[in-house]
Image 1 (spheres, rainbow, N blue to C red):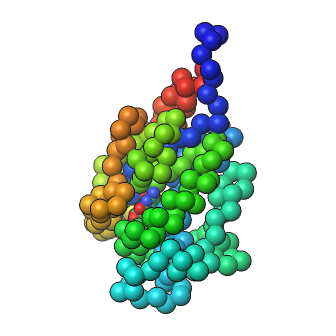
Image 2 (cartoon, protein in one colour; image 1 turned 90 degrees about the vertical axis):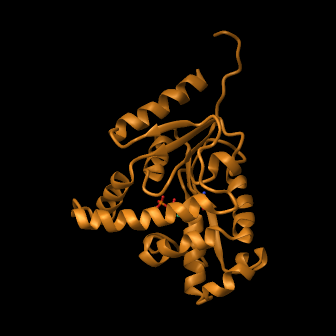
Amino acid sequence: MDGRPTKTRLIITVDGPAGSGKTTTAKEIAARLGYRHLDSGALYRALTYALLKADIPESDWAALTVDDLSGLGVRAEASVAVVDLYLGDALLGDELRTPEVTRDVPAVAKLRAVRTWLLDIQRRLGLRGSLVADGRDMGSVVFPDADLKVFLVASLEERARRRLLQDTGRVPTASAVEAEAARIHARDAIDSERELSPLQCPEGALELDTTELEFEEQVGAILKRVIDLTE
Ligand code: CDP
């Protein structure tokens, strides 16, 4: 012991582009530490799903207010290990990952009212620490004082391949990888070029290129930083 105060109940952020493995990595880190995992992308997806389900046309989205958004009935409830999302009484799961939701979510995530409303919800989930939060702006905007910030990158082709493998459980063909890479590239461009909370590597973040890393290696690299902070 050298008399320094020991940090506990950390906030750890994991940001990165589509398919970089943020959510799987953040979930695993949270499980190993006994922390809660927040998949912030699921919040944006839940709002997108609610807007589509309510048949509100995209041309009306820009005019939505924070009150309109809270009226849609999307709720976030923290359980021990995760944050569950509901639309009304229905627990949301696979419906958040349909091609329609994936296609429209960047347009929803660009809106000021959406980011304002979700910022408050996310910060409340972090009030007691012990959180691993993944997304695009976790380290830059939502938790700028996070104890550890991680930024994951991987080649576009590798991200497309992993995404397809995850979604279908099968090794994808070259042409399927090419088509998925184009979709991911388009989504990355909207997320990086938008005015509010663009995707960026937060200052001071541990940047990990996972293209050639095994999952266990990337988890190990992050946990090593956590141990350095807590010992
Ligand atoms: O899993 P994947 O990386 O494909 O996406 P996601 O994390 O589920 O996020 C879906 C979309 O939500 C992103 O493409 C962004 O448009 C938006 N998002 C955001 O703007 N800010 C965040 N912190 C998380 C997601």
